[in-house]
Length: 124
Image 1 (cartoon, rainbow, N blue to C red):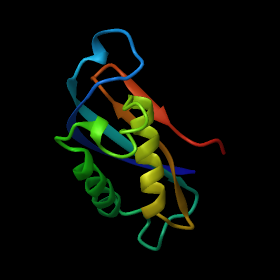
Image 2: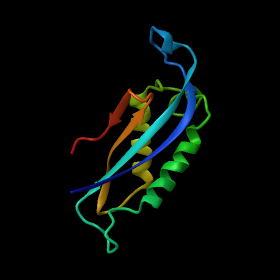
Image 3: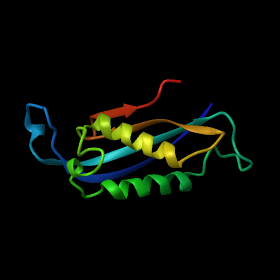
């Protein structure tokens, strides 16, 4: 099994609903995002997936979140913009655009701080 990952990021603000504590107030983060791709078969160039292709898809998605108030962006206007929900959102959005028979998105990690991270993956 091969696995690759890329890293990206975005800066945005949010506040948590139905939460008691300082995070219920408006605040921001410099989010770091890691996307992992896994598969068993490499292409004729010896790659699972070209990093450039994956970076392009992640970059397009990061533009939608960068320098925004997440609570006003779908689906976070309905669900809490927690690191867990952001990781799932990125995973599901990339799953729609990054497709191939040789690989699949294995997980997405969203770092809210340099010490706090949420990871989303689907059961195999």
